Image (cartoon, rainbow, N blue to C red; front, side):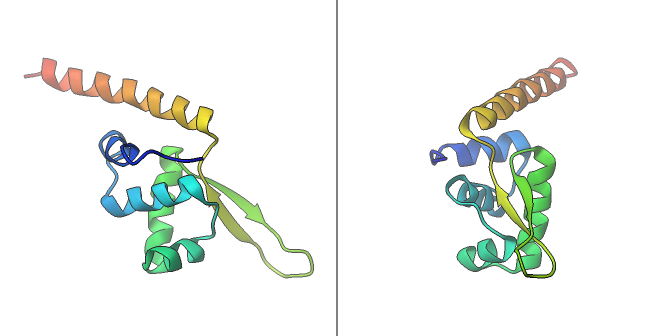
Length: 109
């Protein structure tokens, strides 16, 4: 799924993401990848990428799939974003929540 550049700012505001978390999210818009692959591509430490992915998963913006290779021991995880329709639904839902939260703050002034 291609993500427009403008989505970065929107996701930062709606989900309180850092620039680095947004960078990981944006990377996953166009790729499915393991944490180590993301770390290598973005030039960051794998443990740092793991933290970013954990936060992104709690927002529902990133999904994780467990993969077991035939003939190999252990498993690894592939991270991706939901399909375009699901992503739109989640972001629109969060926009409504965000708007309500901010209106409530305004009313409390």
